[in-house]
Length: 221
Length: 84
Image 1 (cartoon, rainbow over the protein chains, first blue to last red):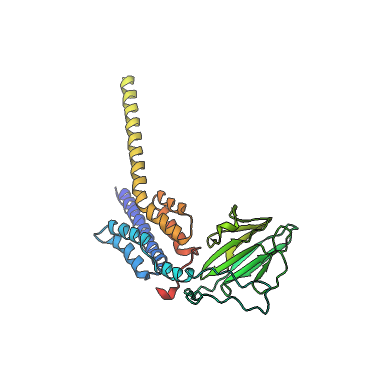
Image 2: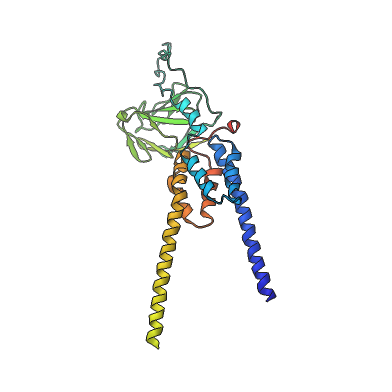
C-alpha cells in the first residue's frame, strides 16, 4: 500500500517537474520569438503564462493566431528598406564617368536594421579549386563575373562557364536579390533556372545558387 | 463458449480500433489549430513551413518548433533587440 502511494507521488512529482520545466522553457522561447519579430518580449512570456490562469489554453491559441497574421514591426522596417529599388548598380568599367543620378524621389535605402552581417558564397570551380566570396550591405549592388575583379564590387568566379559579367547581387537591408544577366551558362536558384526576364529574385532564404557549372553555397556570416 | 470468447474479442478489437482512430483524428484536428498559425510564422521567419508539422508529435513537438524559432537565425531577418 505504502509503496504504491509513494510511486504515485513520484509519478505526480515527475509530471509536475516536467510541466514546470516545459513551461519555463516555452515562456523563455516565446519571449525570444516575439522579440525577433520586433514585439516586446514580455508579450510572448505573458501569452505562455496565461495557460496557468483560468483562461486555460484558449487565449494563448487566439494570441498565437493574432501573432501569426498581424503586421510585425520587423516587416515594417524591412518594407522601408526593401521598397527602395534594387537599382542597377553603377556601370562597371565606366571609370571617370559620373554614376547616373538616382531619381530624387527615391532616396537610397535607409539602414533600418542594425544587422551588420554579410553573406558568403563558397564552392568549387570546375578545376577543383575552392572559391569563397564575401560581401555585405556596404554596397547595394555586386557583380558576379568570370573575369578578374576590376571594381571593388566585383565578385570573381574564375571559371569558363561563368559569364563576364554573369549575374548581379542586390543588397537591401537584410535582404538579398539576384538577377541573371543572360549568359549562356545560366543562373540557377536551388536548382531552378533564373532567366533575365524574371528580373531580380529574392534569395535571402536560399541556400545554393549555380553560376554556369559552379555550385555556390550561400550563407550569412 | 469459445465462439462467445472470439466474438467478444473481435468486438473489443474493433471498438478499440475505432476509438484509436477517433483519437488520432481528434489529435490531428486539434494540432491543426496550432499548425496553421505556426506554419505562417515559420514561413515569415524564413524557415520551411513543414517544421510546424512537429506539432503532431505529442508533448515535445511544440517545444521543438518553438526552439527552432527561438534559437535559430531567421533567414528572413530579425528585428534588432533595441526595438524590443
